[in-house]
Image 1 (cartoon, rainbow, N blue to C red):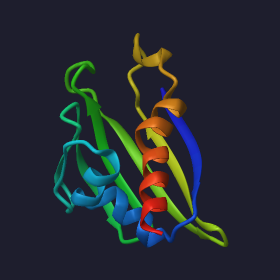
Image 2 (image 1 turned 60 degrees about the horizontal axis):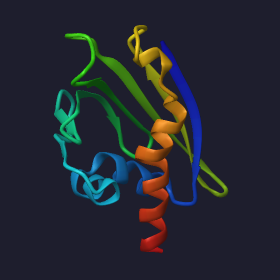
Image 3 (image 1 turned 90 degrees about the horizontal axis):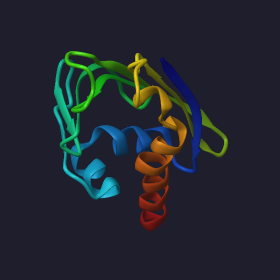
Length: 131
């Protein structure tokens, strides 16, 4: 199962890229434990419940990493794609989550709402405080 979305931010691609990949900034906007080894094959731990590894980093343009929940089927990883596009209003993220488990409860989750609550809304609030 896959999920795709486009999200717009009133900030530069550099700011959004750093907010996602920089461990300290990610902790600040999420107000949660985050560990990110910022390199190819670097290990990641988001919120002590999601784990993965960095596949690709293209400064201010793209982040690709594997991703799995600690409650997912054993050894099942999805792939997360963040592509950052410079637009007049700031940044457009072309977001893809590919390989979500096709079993319950994962196939019934509202992934759009989940990412909005966990990522996009806290990121906007963090950026608003900094402006």
